[in-house]
Image 1 (tube, rainbow, N blue to C red):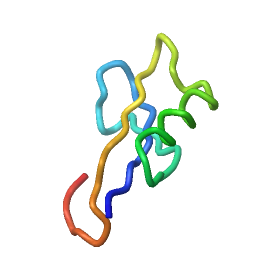
Image 2 (tube, one colour):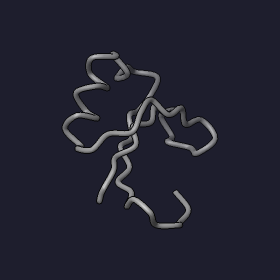
Image 3 (cartoon, rainbow, N blue to C red):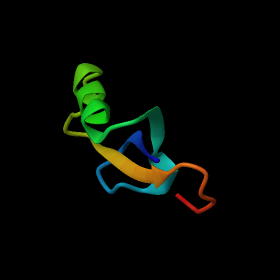
Image 4 (cartoon, rainbow, N blue to C red):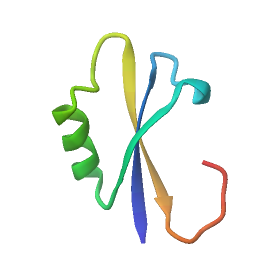
Length: 59
């Protein structure tokens, strides 16, 4: 099963600046949530990472 993690980060998309805003079962729900929470702006980027459930790996 695939899950999608929604992050807001700086313009350079560094891992140190990531803030998690939720985990979703579809990419569309993650993007809709980012729009609803107004995470898109000129100082930040939105990143949606796809991960597999029950799989041990670095994100």
